[in-house]
Image (cartoon, rainbow, N blue to C red; front, side):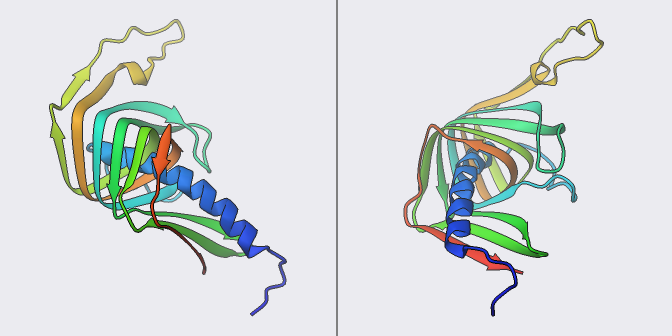
Length: 192
């Protein structure tokens, strides 16, 4: 069936796939950090979803920040940093409006995804089980600046040498990785 819109599906899939691959790396890092954030927020936040059977992370830290989403300029988020991350059973997805329909880009991996220097910005993490080795949660004193505001990122942080998340889902908004390897990467473009 041909739509009235002339979209090069290969080019669209390639660009969307590259964007999702970058997001997948960030999400992997966040999954490793899977600390007590509530379930995903209601509509109006946007983002991409990273799901995994298991995320194993080293050098985990989590702290609050304010960041951008697709729908909002300033949104409360959690910054998750991982020195190293291994993701087993990666499924990364992003829904995009296209010509009055919804395109869903899904990236999968047939092997274990491995990344280093992973930085994620998230608004939600769920996991059937989250295990931390050497978890250190610290609250910090923060003086008010002259404008009466406190920098939230200085108030609390969580750190752990090792973290494991099982059957996890992450709502992410930014992803960066110094390196990432996605063996057997698959890209699927679905229109709804």
